[in-house]
Image (cartoon, rainbow, N blue to C red):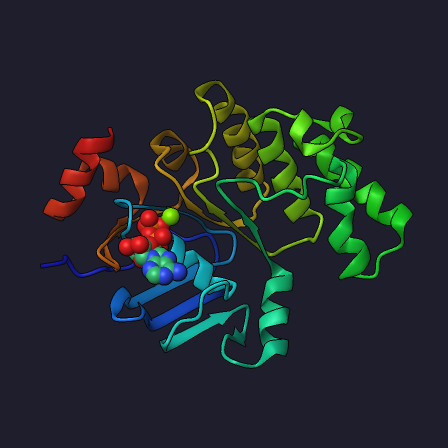
Length: 256
Ligand code: ADP
Ligand code: MG
């Protein structure tokens, strides 16, 4: 039996930016998300953890409709996600996403990776897009890499480019799907440091990660998923020191 998935009380403001209510999703016969209720407040930093296959990626991918849910409601910054393409576009404009495998365009320079969407989607003048790109490359501490191609960079540098690329679109929400799990250990910190700075800047963030040091440091709330359900969620101090569900205890004993 799952513990009741109560919302933790600590949140930054009172403005709701994401609301998932009774969300269910199936891949064919496979019930991947089961009655997900999740309210995210503006500026909140949420870490999502749980075993492989528990539905973490699917959950965050539903927020920018990279995956479609079949039942329940998802409202992002006041816009309901459904079959209306304009509304999906509107949500995607506000939601940045960083993946495990960076997903940079290999045939474009770092600078062109960053300016592509602002120029073609936002119709921004090239000069302005490049200024913004350099601003964010500086923020992720690799302005000197602007002219290189992704293949010439380390994994940690590529992931920082991916983060900067998302920020160039000025998102209100950033989703991260295991952003450090493909990186060599020595590169994990440089990516997490950038994410910590982003969190401190007030960005609303949902981060799927097993980096529990990061969770402890910046998360307002840690969510534990198992078998497509939110089993438990709490502020990090409570989540780690006083997990309620046996499933959470087992999971923490395996990763900590
Ligand atoms: P997690 O990110 O927690 O590892 P996922 O959300 O990726 O979990 O996947 C949850 C479950 O759904 C897994 O069992 C996975 O095999 C399955 N799954 C994921 N994507 C698809 C898909 N496109 N089609 C069918 N099954 C999928
Ligand atoms: Mg995943």
